[in-house]
Figure 1 (cartoon, rainbow, N blue to C red):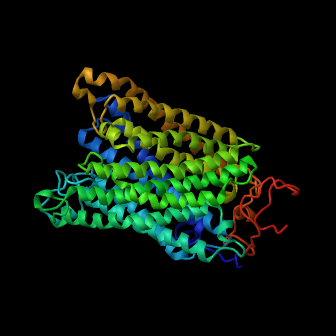
Figure 2 (spheres, rainbow, N blue to C red):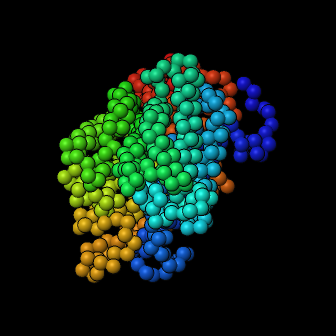
Figure 3 (tube, rainbow, N blue to C red):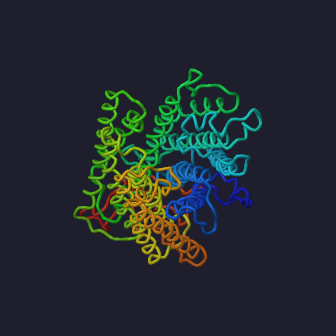
Length: 562
């Protein structure tokens, strides 16, 4: 391979077609969006605990600003943080090196996908600066708030086109285009560009999971894209697809949204579980238990993910007989994931466990997600959900599912693969401090909100004191604790930032394979050269050959014949 050609700064770092640079670009933009999403959360959470008070670094939060901030916080964290860092970022970094090839199948398409994604983020942020401000009708964009509702009525076509609602819909559409481009690349690269000898059952688990997540996204996003186009027409040219007074149906949007929105949970979850599947065997020094079974379970979950969407609609007037069907489906879909987690636990059982920073975040992910998963079983029951729907019980539940996916999954991956792809050793002490602060303050932020929800506290209300002191009493103390903890949780990420910049500026050069891992990315130089491999490797074994009897070392890389 030829690696000696010179590149300009722009071609190397801005408009690069190298999958590693693009992966880092996705992660960088995702983390910048996390800063924005975190700031929005700080503002509205401070307002919840201390309504009517001036918010440091912001000032007074008006009711409509509260709606806007909470809407965009949800949108940003799901679509502009979770997807770029877990799916696009990790997928770009890992897939070519782990399957033993030089780059993605379509490098230019890969670069284009990143810049379309970046454009989508710019469009979303720009909505804050148009007349009327950004959309504030909830991140699920339910009509009538999003379809000619109180924020969107305008006789001026140009004003309607550049309203906060229209810009949010456009941003989502652009982001979906970018993710579809990336998913095509992931699948074609894995299928067509694998190293010689890498049969399907020798592909690392995270590559399987990234590809399955891409397939879920491709098959589920179509109805929402169609619905978004209909919603855009309702806002710009005055159609009535979701207007009941004109023969439309606002509930139709809920079906279109959640047919994608619930599988989206697994688009985020599967890459994070793939990270666990790589880290746990390495730091247990054991082969991954039931590797093939885990893949079959993930495929089963992919199929089931698109048939349980309406459990989000138990209070929308759904027929009770259909509600029972979706309740049963929701409980059934927990079985494949229970099997995957049990396989991870079996891998740990009897292993020589090393509590490195990546392993700590991986185990923290397991512990926190189990809380989210178990409370999800309660909400999957329509009898319980009728009372808990739109309460803070739901808020606590989905933060216990999405926060471990997005952040614990990402941090585990970051501390595990950072030395390989950027060539520097991260500070272990700072990493462990970061883990414990994040774990403690996350739990103290969200666990108490389960109790507020069970007391009946409804979400998406900016000032609960409006209901009087008696109604506020069960909520106020826990709201203050949650707010202080949330601020501490945000500030604790400065330890991560300090570790990152300290390492980049003065960190020691990392070893080629510091964890003694067996997959192909550890065969490359540190950091990998342009094109990844001097010569393409040949694969002779599976990805998890640890503690093999009579082996010279306690691991055997995939490219070693004997």
